[in-house]
Image 1 (cartoon, rainbow, N blue to C red):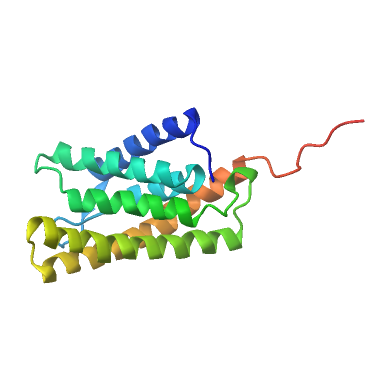
Image 2: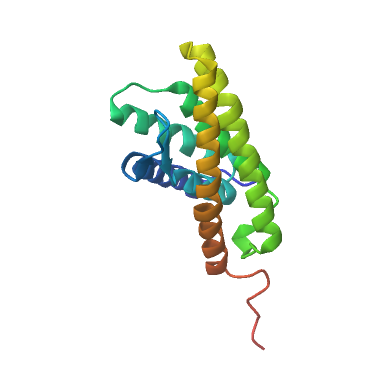
Length: 183
C-alpha cells in the first residue's frame, strides 16, 4: 500500500488544483449537453497511480467540487462522486505498478490503460447515470448518453495525457539499483 504522507497531502492539493484548472478552463463542449472534452482525468489517473487510491479519491472529489461550484450551477454530486470513484479505482488498480522506481514500460502501460478504461466505464456508464437518476430524477436516456460520451472522451484523453505523464515521470525517476557504490 502506498503510504499516506505529507508528500501525498501535497499531491492531493496539487492534483485537485490541476483537476480544477483543466476542467474549468481547458475544456471544449462535446455537443452533448453538459458534457465537455477535457484532459483532467489524465492528470487524476497519474496522481492516483503515483500516490494511491486515497489521493486519487480526494483529488477527484475536491477538484470536481470546485469545478461545479465555480460555474455557479450548483454542485452536481453524482458526477463529483463519479470523479472520486474514478480516482480511487485508478489508485487501487495501479498499486502493482512501481512507477517510483522508473518502471513504466509496455506491461505497465497496458495495466494503466486497461485500468483506466474499466474505471471510466464504472464511473461514467454506471455510477454517474445511476446517481443522476436517483438524486436528480434525470431521464435515463439522457444521462446514459452523457455517461457514454463522457466515458469515451475521458478514456481517450486519459490514454494520451495520463500515459504520457506516467512515462515522463518514470523516465525522470532513478531506476532500481541504478546507483552503484564506488570502490
